[in-house]
Image 1 (cartoon, rainbow, N blue to C red):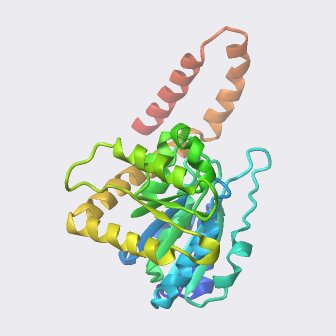
Image 2 (cartoon, rainbow, N blue to C red; image 1 turned 120 degrees about the horizontal axis):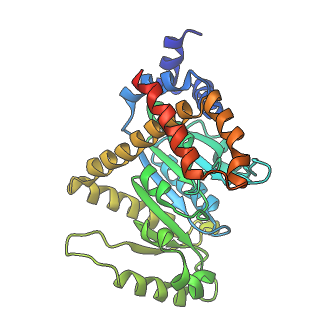
Length: 319
């Protein structure tokens, strides 16, 4: 298969070509950058939805129901289900395909499980690159499903046009103490498993927090949707809220503004990644290793070593 033919097959949503492209991107293959460059001219049509929240909140079940709902509207759906990477083994459970087997065989659905690969925000750079492949392949919706366990959930908000935070009634007592990052990125909340005891107190706690937010007459105020995803209750309301938020962004010129802001962050991250790779070429990596004993013994400072390495890097660029 020629490179041109490979790209064309992605554009017509050849699933084998799409899967192969994502695998190349995941592996860090040198061809991945060229593939992403070629695909970019067809990127920007898909609407990206982030679904996050604490473990056990029912995110996979909700994703499954939303995917079925969109398919009934004849929309193609790409799902990127992200599992956290183990800091000890580097592996990830990647069990979302099993949990979403109901829609996995649908020709209009593409599901890919990926690992966070150490990204604290819950998404890795390669996850966003994979979403670009699905976008170029003509999927109408791309859903990121990830766990809200990182130090920051900004990765989700930067990748998605609409971000949904899924909570359960048991979260009610701890909502006040829940980390601000997870609460502040939500464009709206889904209180899943709302048939359980404590759902009303959780709802009140959420509404209290939202009332404390600064907002103007025209600003977006996150809504709270009650759902029981396992029974497909609340799915239409969630889809309607996604559409309402989409319309709000479009009507106020915020979708383009948000995407521009996200691209700015992403370009900076790509540049930093290139610089980091160039900085730690073999010679400087060896120099660092050779200097560690001196730092431990107090003969020199970490700052002095860092300055020496950086100055060496600068001199290489200036040559």
